[in-house]
Length: 417
Image (tube, rainbow, N blue to C red; front, side, top):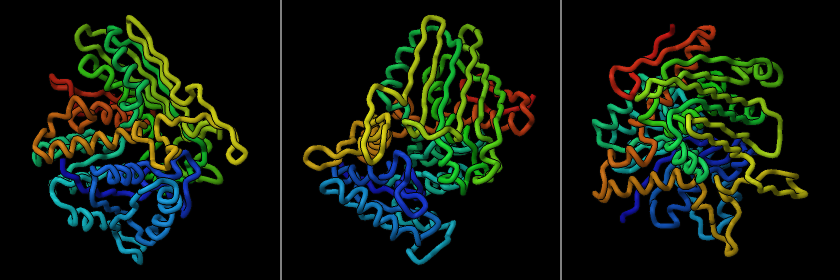
């Protein structure tokens, strides 16, 4: 099968692991996207790689960072990539357009930028015949989401959302078990990151997005995926907590914690279920970078997962005590010095998309063949509807926001009631 070319759009923590001119202090100091694509190139699946940001003066530091965090750590890792804009250009918000024009139809792009940029970048890529993997949330409004669905269909390209929780073996098993637990009754999830993320994300936090879009999207998508076709959300109320982000040293006008309460309706029976999704970025520093857990109750069973604690802890003089999670990204090299994280669910969510693009390129599959296999843009509209409805509710003093359908499973509009 032939190799494919890729453009990484966005140079932040998840793509590069490079934050504020140094390696991130989070659990992603080597990044996720670039590292995975470098390894997929080593494995013969990817060929040319490019990266685009708005500030070209960051690229010398990123290249040195990749040398220290990747090339010096793993054997046979080629870290070369083309970059846009040039290294001497400090600001070019439209550089992604030149980068897209440098790709060919059938190549793919990854989009890991502030949330309010996703839609316009994705549309520009789709119109050029490029396949797209966009981070969650894919867009901020249902209207934008529906525009991407239409564009992807018109241009016959694969557009998918990078929601790596679907590739976590425990979450995937839970989803399969949930399908046999009857009508949905109750779901509660919690996800947090430490206060230092307010500094990492200070350029966009509270401006282009909020903590619900950023973190609640994980479990909103997982829950919607688990009961897809069986239940649908009909009403959302959003509530927020404040007091930390808005004060010194952060001084960011945004909520600290957001909780969405969602009324779901089981389609066949009409029975109602309730979901509560909570996300925060003011957690204290603890044994994990991100607390992640959920409780699911069906009418015939229940599931509990504490994703952050799986009975594996590590303590060193250099880094102290931590609960380790190599199931997401295994950064420790193999005994012979090679990157060995191919089974991590952070890696698999990328490699599965690359495999899909290869299959489409070779004529073995079409984009619609992946609607039941990947989080395609056409099958993830419920996630966006819930997140936007939550934001609308917050902006309207906690009034409920209704999700409107017109006979099908996919939402068509939202209305404050």
